[in-house]
Image (cartoon, rainbow, N blue to C red; front, side, top):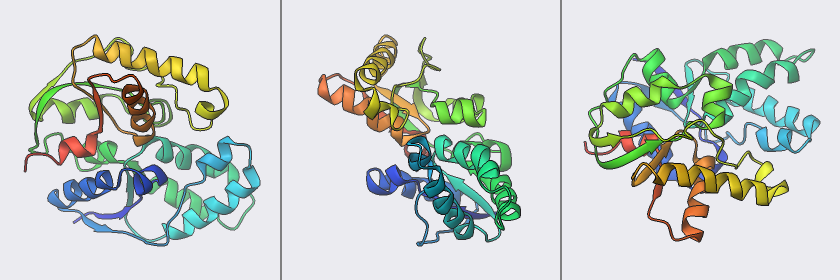
Length: 240
C-alpha cells in the first residue's frame, strides 16, 4: 500500500477545499494510505515571486520538516510541485536542510503525475457527462513536464467528450503576482484563453491548478460567459 503525505496548497485550502477532498477520495480508492500533517502551510512560492527570498527560505525550511516523513508527497498543483522541485535545492545550499531538501524533492509529485507515473493508472472509473477542453497550466507543463498524463486520465472518463483548444499551452495570465502587477495584460491573457476554449464548444475547462481556475473563472463570471472551470481531481472523483 503506497504511503502518501497529502500536500494542500493555499488556494485549495482557502477557496477549493472540495478539490483536496476529491484527491483523497481518488487516492484511497486506488489503495493509498493517505496522511495529512495539519501543521503544514505554504510552500513559499508567493513570497519568492514577490522578491522576499530570505523569508521564503524560512517558509521552505518549515515545509521540509513538515514533510520529512516517509512516503510520497502528493499535491493538486503543478505550480507548487514545480517550485519545490526546481528552487528548493538552490535555497537550501550550505544549510543543514540541504540533504532533507533532496529527499523531499525526490518524493514530491503533482496529483495526475503520481497517478500515471507512479501508480501506473490511467482509468479511475469516473463518469462525468459534458464537453470539456484541457488547459495546460504553466506550472504543470513547464516546471514539471506534465502533458500527456492528464489527457490519458480524462480520455477514460465515461461520458466526457474532450476536445483540444488552439491555445491549450498558452498561459492564462495569472502567474501569481503577475496578475496583480500587470492587471490589464493579465486580463487580456485570460480573454485569449477563454476565447480559445469557447471556440471548441466546450462547457468546461479542466486543469491541474486551482490558481488558473480562480483567475479564468473570475474573467468568465465578470463577462457572464457560459463556461465553468474545474480541477481534474473533481472530474476523476465523479460518478462512483
